[in-house]
Length: 467
Image 1 (spheres, rainbow, N blue to C red):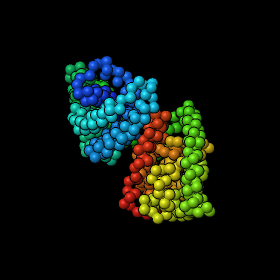
Image 2: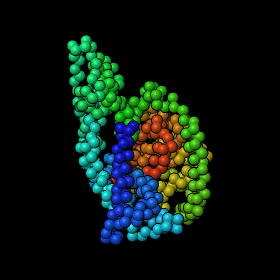
Image 3: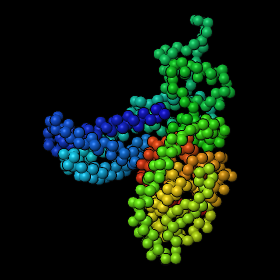
């Protein structure tokens, strides 16, 4: 919803302004004086080609993730990584097309990127600490009382950088002496509108006291206060859905069963086939090299690929392909077993393949065959699914769509090794089931590049334990 997305949009607009300011500073620093307007505009025309590149890099490294950049150490790390990637990308772009661009700005390019990242880092600190927390903060009131609402309120109080300030529900006066009936005063004269910018409602709880709750809702509607359910607020704030609510038939009817996305499905399948075919062709030398390396390191009788039965679309079974990274028979440890980084079952070459997520490359064959998609919930082992189906409410809902090589849960959560973690992962899978779109798929693919360089939470210090 725009209630949340305007934050990233205005943060991006600030970045765009800072980019052209960084260019001006770079030109002045190079010449040690003010630059002529025509000279600056000439560079603006050429350097604008780079705008989509740095914007994509900023997104991938998490520069628009408010929770991530609120921590100074994360902000600095993201800035340094972004600087290195942007410098390499800009250099490649400009020197590949310097004849068409008409400029080869070596020093200007370097200084612009330096100034951009300094300004963007400071801008984010000001944005989270001042702009959102104090200047553009939204006063939010909650109508209803349940554990989920209390969880949201507690988080908002502890996270002022999100830009929300929890306020109590105002008392509504119902004096009817003047005209013989009650009516709200409208946006300009409303007492509620002066105290509340956003009303979050638990619809079920509101029905328990219809008189008072109806009065509050009517007032909010007439005074043009934005209203959102606590479930939608939770979903947009955290990017996940509580499975307890998704387990209800009403959620299925409202958010999944009524959706008709035939065009999206057909287009996604076409993109899957084209991307998988191209990927298999381009990675053929890599596949051959890994195949040979596995045979040489582990013996020619050892398999180079790992095959395992997984559960796919609508519960159908299929065999997933991966490069073998562990000793033969390692899956005998059983389901729900998290692999530690120091696990002795992992081979030498397997450590490298796992760390770079390159062991997943053969899954492009599963995508081409139609067993999987590029984006979707990760397919689980059949033995794990049997356990989780019995213990996790409506776990099967994640099978409503094809599993993917990467997914929303993969970029937001770590690998699971318990039923409790599987419930949390399902939060994210159901968010994708409800909101899947090409735009979301593109965002997941971009953020997957960052995920490649992240370790799963707890994998380094925690040893694998079977459940």
